[in-house]
Length: 89
Image (cartoon, rainbow, N blue to C red):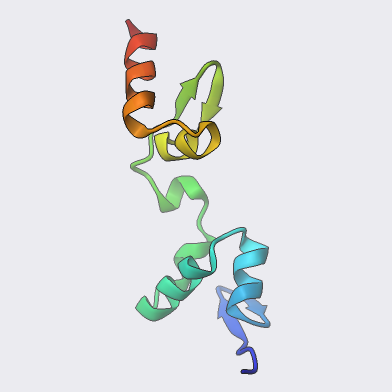
């Protein structure tokens, strides 16, 4: 199947995969917004796309969210919440 060009804002990409790669997003995220007609949201900064995220610091290392800390440390959400709770006491 031949890739279909996709335009996001004023940027033209050769395919959804190229857009995802250049915007540092998962391919599924581009597909999700394409289906919903919200491609312009992909050009927002992560803070603007996800205003509910709360930055956290685990063992002195800052992360933009608990989910990011989970991915980086390999700890579960429960483990991280326990570490964060103990750090504030």
